[in-house]
Amino acid sequence: MKINKISIFTPYSKILNDEVLKYFKSEGFAVTSNSYFDIEADYDIGKVDQNYLYDVLSKIDLNGADALFVSCTALPVLPIIDKLENKLNTTVLSSNQALIWDTLVKINKNNSVKGFGKLFHAN
Image (tube, rainbow, N blue to C red; front, side, top):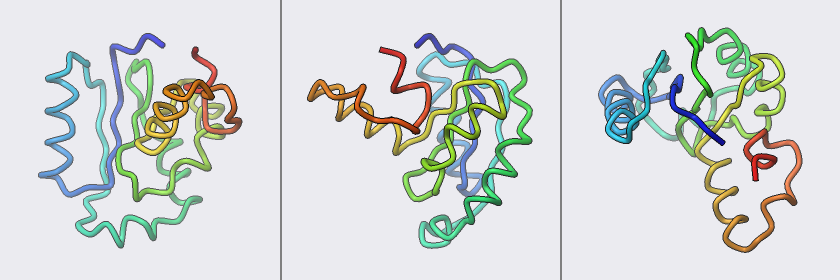
């Protein structure tokens, strides 16, 4: 999967959101757009309604990005990745999805997951 330009969404405060942007840029990614919720506590991030999250993410201007990355393991994005990819017509990546994919690649089972996005069909 070739991704050079990325749109980033986080639920974090501005300070932490900016650290995520800084990291991706330092790794050579061009960040085409960024949005965030400005939520301070992980507990509150975990309470974000999936339908609301879908509505917000499905309206993001990707600005020519190769993919949308949704940061944070507490944000309930995993169950809506396929739906988002269909709506946005692009690859959607998330923290939990990438962790699951990496683990399954290491045990040679990465093709065993359905419904968690294009990442699982890339290799």
